[in-house]
Image (tube, rainbow over all chains, first blue to last red; front, side, top):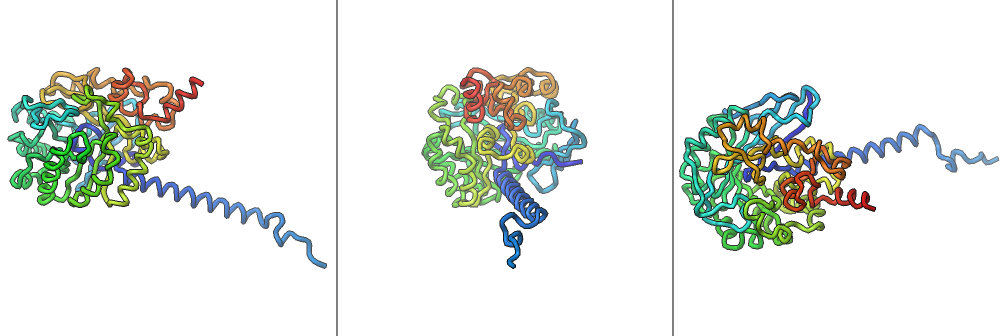
Length: 64
Length: 370
């Protein structure tokens, strides 16, 4: 069983359903934040697993 | 006792106690082509009488408007209750002129439904306001001095809202947004805050009743205004700390702001729900898929049969089959459903044309033509 819809509040004016913008915009912000965090985590993880990047100090030839 | 749940083809609709929310629980995949077993909300236009006679009234109410008796409306409530309806939206005309309004509301409570009310506020006095506890939500129609109802009704509506607020916590404003009052939306929200109200519902101007005869183009929002609806709402909510809602005809504007379809679906931000989640019974006893549509069926006693078989309802349910090419290819189509069909019918002559306010559909049409 899963929740497929949450309807919050009713328009007492007429037969038109209300869209609760606070919930919608909060969910959008959380979703955007989640996407940003996931992208950041993915970038950090891929950097770590690839090892030092070309041109970094670790890749330079040792000084004799 | 209030109805707690109702079984549907996809699972259950549950109304948790002490909330104003409905939760849709799926036990199987939801078939969008399959209409609900009954509406979740019914609009009852309990009288055609209204002393205001506003030029834009979508019900075309007048001072000569008729009123059917309480026994008729109790019969309608009985039918709706047996079908499993959760909420009633009581309106008019001006419902405050109806002598048995509170008796009907109490009867609806007894039958497990939540009665909600909208009033112009002009007849609200202390005694009347004190009886409004029976309603789940009370909203006052208040568009600002620049709105369609004008300055005279605005002052009386403010007085009515103030009086209602003295007797109950949950009072809101229903504000019809037009080209004329859109620039003054901050003033309306500031007023709501000052009156101690919690909620402002922004409603689109619909070409129905007398508003269909009025110049719709002159009142409808401009393209720029539609494009800024979501950013405006976000700003107003934060600035005035109010709950702001949009009616379902505004959903194309939400899609145009790029809100993800999945999020819109989860929070019930769907387009036209006429003839599915909604139905309306007018003051003469006719039944409609939506209060703003002129197609109607006689009479409310056969509501269950009408719900299942009527053409007045089935046209609302064919949006997937009949949707325009521009809409069908849109990412938001399953959510938006083509927007407000009443507006589309009025502006383009076609029920299934894309909502005229939708710039996503407009871009698709333009690219097809190019």
